[in-house]
Length: 211
Image (cartoon, rainbow, N blue to C red; front, side, top):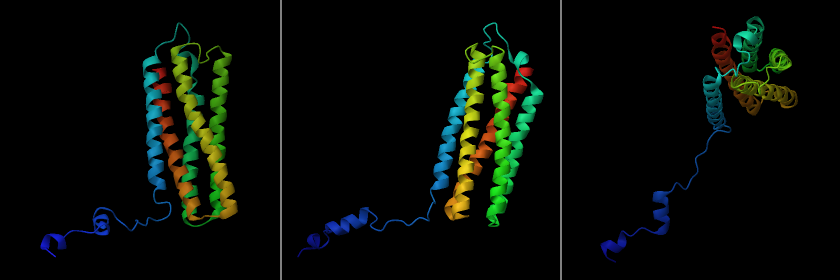
């Protein structure tokens, strides 16, 4: 046997050199948070496009009413407070979750749901009032962009409430398992994300519209 023949690698050796035969072992649910962050980034793109559309169409009133004619800042300020309070109460839910208190976690989640439902109720009242006044999304480019942006945010809050009630039921059935804790953490990110988006809506749409 020559030296050249002696150094020829077998197929098994070549496979071991280029591929890892033993799979990596990751903790259960380790990729959940990364995947959810990726989802939030895609949601950021959606809202960025809606904000951009409002920036382009926000001055197109088609001889119809504008922000100063339609918006009631005291009502919108109350609505903003409802969402901000819901974010605070969700933070309390996460604190008691870390202490392993299932009942207290559920209680704070339900308080959060009350504030979130109040936010939606006020928003639906605003929409119905605008439509009753003839200022529906078909009236002008400004109103189309307004209803699209604010309505999309409201839909996200609705989905968040459905998710929240689902977690309350899961906590009753299975308690604070690692899977449920991850779900609570993901919903926490989602809920605070909606808060940040609403602050942008409140500033860019309502406050700047009244200037």
